[in-house]
Length: 140
Image 1 (cartoon, one colour):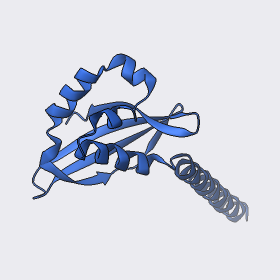
Image 2: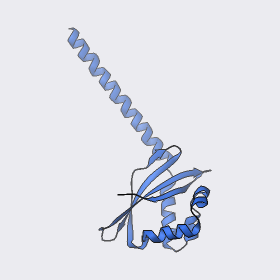
Image 3: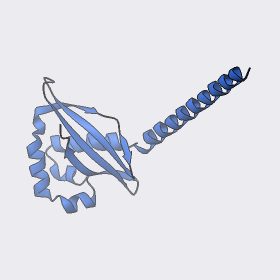
């Protein structure tokens, strides 16, 4: 009798724990989706500005902190080193929240899908708008 009672309590505890974990995961997923609104249009705008040759427009989509650390010339050199004209497709990874920043790995893929360029973008909210705070190549 005692063994059956322990088994019953253990099963209920396990179900309660699993339910709490599921609720926690769902809450965090919804929080991430809601907080990340506006990032995809910013990414699209950033790459459209570059594709149209409006580098200054893309540079203005970054934060003041980014512009203090990366001047316009260094930004141009960085973009040149990426050879973005080789890539046509963009695949977005899963966003990660760290402090009050969202980090998103974007994978640029060549048209023939033979080469891939992963970039980590860090976004911060400035007032009500998202801005790019950091762009870095992902080391393989």
